[in-house]
View (cartoon, helix red, strand yellow):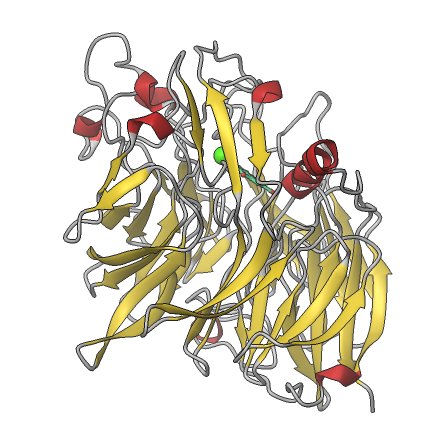
Length: 555
Ligand SMILES: O=C(O)c1cc(C(=O)O)c2c(n1)C(=O)C(=O)c1cc(C(=O)O)[nH]c1-2
Ligand SMILES: [Ca+2]
């Protein structure tokens, strides 16, 4: 491909339907394709066009990113593959060896970012690397974190905004104080850093212990920003989700603990905080708030207003007002799975009150629902402007019993305040399902339809198209499925070699619409499957091994 079309800021702000230039397809985070060649009427005729093994096991969580006829797929263990998107021919392979002694809790990667003639990828060992899109040759690399000293690792896809590429490390279970860093696209020089937990004296620090036994809690307080953010290009505001508290037990850091379990509105040029909303204070469940909300407009008193919507791990869907200056106002929150902790939500502020019996503490056992994986973990929701619905891959009928303790923080080791062997997941044996998809009308704030899976969790992102087709993997039976986005009717399915936890994407070349997805089960989905084997007798393992799949309509 000698004619690689540079990915400009204008293209990112207004992506052509033919391409899939970023993880969720657009800056609003819609996971929506405006292509409509594949429809509810013809999707039955979808056939595989090409596939390719990635050569990696573990969880493949990156979408196929497409610009013109080039496709980029990142895989576990620091690998990027470039294919001809039409033929499947492998164009180049970049691989970065993991340093000796490296270990991480989640050995995965959620995708690359594109800008200009470069491909940006963050790696488990805390580096961000710019590659030449045409050849895969390394152009620059910069350090985001220190995997040894900070016990941090990166799984997130970076996000490009104007002239910077932004990413943050993981490590909420290792006591990492979360942050984002922005790097200059051309030189790789660091432009800004924004910590999610304020240092003493900074705004928000008053919500952390200032003295006494826990006065240093902020230093390892968590709040990792391990999922990519979204961006309001019109008002130039970045929205990024903030993860769980560290350790998990809130009584080891008394206070609300801003900005844990929150969404932050940031100035993309400086990292300055312009607004925030905290979903729940003093996070004690690993429920986090790392999923950036989806940018939509919703109806209020017959008028469309700019808003943010998201299904959070804590079991509630949030409608928030998005102000041009970055301020975020609470509008409403509705429960979408069983939740036994919030007893009420303040209608003005969104602040919940808790049933203390459902809040684990140090030496205190509590059972809470949903379990730490939440109503929805990291998989992306999707929004269709055609149906006006938000599609949520969800899991219900599961709870967790935890007993907190004081764990010494040793770099590189689990220190969440609970023994990793004592994560007591309890799935209701009488429940008719665990995983599923819910479709909610954004304006009407009500559930329109749902699909449920009797014998599987759902660990897959969903993607919706202008042909009103909703594509979804996520189940342990290895299927890739297409639903009617209007009513949830199953229209087509195809078994892939492994289970699918990567987000589907769509693109268009030479008159043909393609749908791509990466098969490759692993990480938490695989861990949970093992637990379900023990408790429910489900198949112990879903076959592992990554492969890229591309589908189109038969001629
Ligand atoms: O606190 C963190 O830094 C952090 C990072 C990650 C990650 O980077 O994948 C996960 C989680 N937490 C987490 O709580 C979680 O449930 C989870 C599931 C997965 C996955 O890939 O299936 N990653 C992560
Ligand atoms: Ca976590």
